[in-house]
Image 1 (tube, helix red, strand yellow):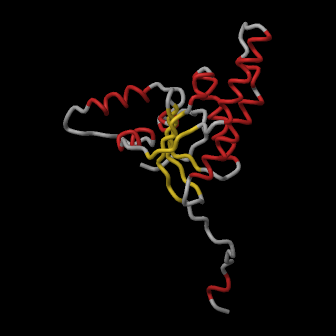
Image 2: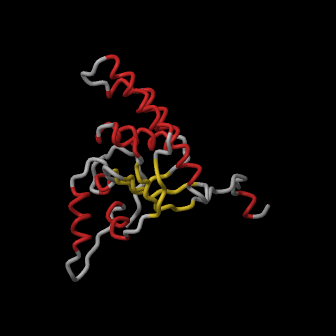
Length: 185
């Protein structure tokens, strides 16, 4: 018997993940929902795809205008997953539509409801690549030390310092709202 016969071999090949550093610019639907509500729905959608093993998140930041993601997927192109995320967010917005009913009359609510459902059917995000390498490093828990003052870097540090919807929380040792896989630094 050879030495290799003693060891069990796995017939399942290891999955290959592609890294993506993307910015999803929020469309007009952002105007119809409160920042915290909108961010919570986005977090719920991201966690759904993490649990379905379609997405591995290494870093994220949700702002009033964009969702920044440092992710890994099995797909070389991120477009299909972004469409799935949009569909899931639309589903969640329709499912929890009573959250945005304030003190408005029934007739106003019906008109407002039609406008919101119309905006939900539009593409929710515009896909772009993240341009700032500082942002990528900050939301993935890496330290940036440069010998000069950079106003962009200082702005980003202040932005993520106590931001409730940012992966810097997880890298500091606390638990954030999205389940992430920490990168080793």
